[in-house]
Length: 183
Ligand SMILES: [Zn+2]
Image 1 (tube, rainbow, N blue to C red):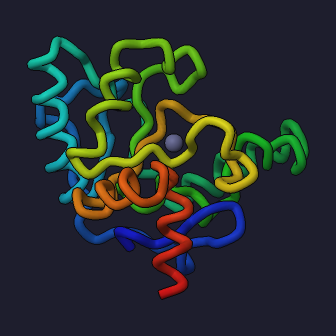
Image 2 (cartoon, protein in one colour):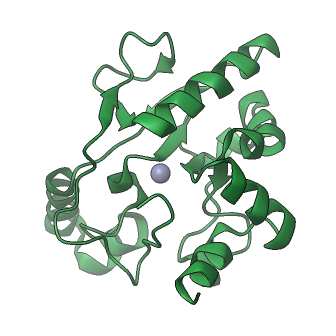
């Protein structure tokens, strides 16, 4: 699943849940709350990236991580009840369609457009790739990715893949994942 395409069109296999989720609590990472979880490889990469950021005096706050299928159903149903389906679909992924269900996606900081102007966002822009993380929803690519720019949302795809995305796919993860599917 590390390089599985999941977006507004393609969902994860029914009720997919990773088997190697680990808690972020107790790791020393900066977290928005207790209970965050990530897959082992993503967590190890995040710990290494966090150490590098700290040595540059940058704090990477983890605000969102793994989201289970059931949790997505809850958020979706609540949204539809309050605002209707069309409005909910604009801001919330349908259950089974979120990169966060992979256990390898992370939202940093405020999860708002203001994040783009922070030191952390700029640091991630220049450094995430060498730790295997890739910005999933770059600026101006909504017609390709299905999402407007999310300066805070990174997906761990591993160092070789992240390097390929940067070097041969213009930093557009979506192109790379679609390319892999066609092989
Ligand atoms: Zn996200």
